[in-house]
Amino acid sequence: MPVIIPKDLVGEDVLEREQIFIIGENRAQTQDIRPIKIAIVNLMPKKEETEIQFLRMLSNTALQIDLDLIRMGSHQSKNTEMEHLNKFYKTYDEIKNNKYDAMIITGAPVEKLEYENIKYWQELKNILEFAKTNVYSTMFICWAAQAALYYYYGIKNEVVDGKIFGVFEYEKLEEDKLLKGFDDEFLVPQSRHTYVKEKEVRKHSDLKILASREDTGVGLVTTRDNRFIFSFGHWEYDRETLHSEYIRDLEKGLEVSVPRNYYKDDTPEKGINVKWRSAGNLFFSNWINYCVYQVTPFHLEEIQQKNVSKFGGTSLSDAKQFSKVKNIILSEDDRGVIVVSAPGKRSNEDEKVTDLLIKTSDLKKRQEKINKILANLKRELNICNFEISKVLETVKKRFEDISLDLNLNEDIYLEIEECFKDIEDSRDPDFIISRGEYLNAKLMAKYLDYEFIDALELIAFDEAGEINVEESQSNIREKIKLNKKYVVPGFYGKDLSGNVKTFNRGGSDFTGSIIASALDSNIYENWTDVDGVMTSDPRKDNNAKTIPSLKYSELAKIIDDGAEVYQKDAIAPVMEKNITIKFLNTNSPDSKGTVVKD
Ligand code: ADP
Ligand code: ASP
Ligand code: MG
Image (cartoon, rainbow, N blue to C red; front, side, top):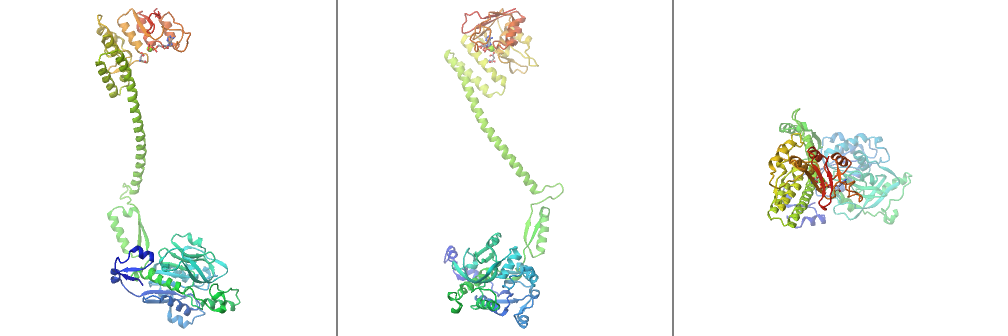
């Protein structure tokens, strides 16, 4: 029985470790006490002997026990007086509306028969089914343990060679309420021809093997909630029971060996050595105390089947549905476990919560993908920003170096600074690309002390994006004064919206030629880094020779053949006015270069 101790006298961990069972003072004062109702389904042949054996085990507790003895109605016992049976025993039909705190189903001498061939199998199945919902904890002994494992779990037993016969030592495999106070090893009488293999039981996670041996199979198994206990041995056996069975079998002429570890020195003549009693008593009192008395409901009627009721999303789509469901649940007592779906559609047009959640999860996946792309882009953007500033730094330094080396006036640096700020702020490719010509013209104008005139003021494009020759020529004639000197950036002009528009690569040649044409110049000098137009590209061919003179058409052909010395478009404006082009070498100004005319 539990020890009642003042709260906090000993730490809970100590109590747990020492396996001391306590109840607090409060619980003790308020605990409801009533007799424990136990049923014994007695399948043993000598019923009176078995009754006494179990009563002895059960009386080992201070509780009042209210006992029902149950026999199989579908079987006539040969070994027990009918009078006794009629007087003390009930059949399943008589108890089927009862509830019990505990039930014991004893062993039976039918182990070699197929379950289905046993006369009372159907009746026993009714009792096994009954036990599920009407008994708090059921203990199955020996054959009943095998039958119950078969009925509830489909686990089959197997016949052993010889007989598992004698007193067997088991090791405690797991801690359990049933084994509180047990030594690490304990003894149990066994007497059977069949056994259940440990590996079959291990397949069921709600079963716990407390004792097992290779030669006897599992010895003690329990459901994790201790509501079914499968005890393969006979702790209830008297001193003489195994002996009587031994003699009985010998007399029947059966081949049976001396029950092992039972007689002193395994010698029948030396008498019986009882070694299982203390463990057996402890086992039964643990069962009654921890698995029955402390946990069974005070009102036995409350032991009932927990039916499972599942309510789908349509049944739970809104509060109104919830209230209907509540009424349904409460209208039957046995609706013990309710399984619910997520709220479903409230109307045809509505969306199920699960669909919305799937949508959420899909969007989350997409969000994650986008975030990844964004993170990558961010990384790329950072690299790009870094490279932009590096490249611009390099370009800026080019202009600053020229300005520095030329000792240009300080204010050029402000212009450079401003120009690079404009580049940073701009997204217009033509504007950005044109800034090389623009700034170089600024530097040169400063250096020469000539007037800077922006190409935007001179070169105009039409709506088709082509150069508007007429307007450009008129601008040039208007803006370029005869008595003044100018520096003009090449390569770009102004489109109809007033924005910068660049020519094709090498387009400064064109800027020069259109201005020369507008101003009716005699000569258009095109200074480069080689001695004029040559027979081939001197950068690639050491034997390239300067061509002293060319016609415009010959120059066009050479350009068509790949010479990149002049932009082809820039021939027409000067050719139309018969302006001579002179290709000259900045690095060798005295060389004659190439003269191009008609
Ligand atoms: P710029 O910047 O002066 O306009 P370009 O690079 O546009 O100079 O053109 C001059 C370059 O053209 C020369 O450095 C030379 O390598 C190349 N080139 C290719 N073919 C010829 C050729 N047949 N005659 C002269 N130069 C040529
Ligand atoms: N700077 C421009 C280019 O590299 C224009 C030119 O060189 O005439 O194409
Ligand atoms: Mg060029």
